[in-house]
Amino acid sequence: MALDGLAHDERTNAVVGWLLLGIVAVDAIENLLRDVPLWGGFELFVVAVASVPALVTREWTAMVPWPILSITAFAVLAGTAVVPFETTVYLAIASLAFVVVVELEAFTSVRLSSRFAVGFAVLTTLALQALWTIAQFYSDAWLGTDFLRTQTELQWDFVVVTAVGLVLGAIFQWYFVRFESVDTAGERTNGTGSR
Image 1 (tube, rainbow, N blue to C red):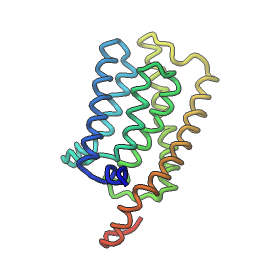
Image 2 (image 1 turned 135 degrees about the vertical axis):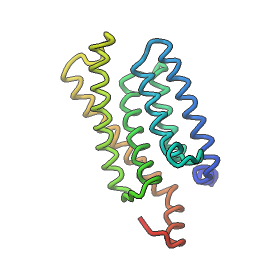
Image 3 (image 1 turned 60 degrees about the vertical axis):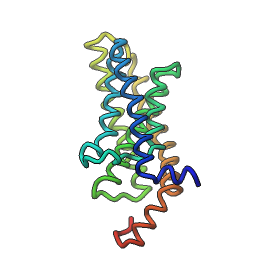
């Protein structure tokens, strides 16, 4: 299948991944210049997190699979476009959590079962939402923005981002079973261990 080859070809995956990160970085700089510092800063944070494997390994091809990065890039870019901001924030935070979990699984000695990885990603989503809430609080206090209006709204943010994380988790598990099973089988064949 063409998509299967595209997802597993390391160089092609890296080219697509860096292209996506480049677009997000340009949009982040544009947001910073348009005086939207919180979202521009978040976009730069996404680029930094997604770049960590390449920076640590000093291999430009060390990149999470482009389909996962594309969801994150779409979410952060939609936050700048006409899509409702709150909706895109939920998707951006949840997808960033999955990028973190995939990086842990792919580029460290950590090995997670697919079900545990999904649960861990949902918990990471909640942690990132908490950091985003703190950033909004200080943005409201220091920059005069109006992100946090009521406590009820804040509580619903956590409920909705958890639901988005669970939905993304189901998609992630499907992706893992569908596209990553070839790599896992190869690991077992080569004697490097099983997950």
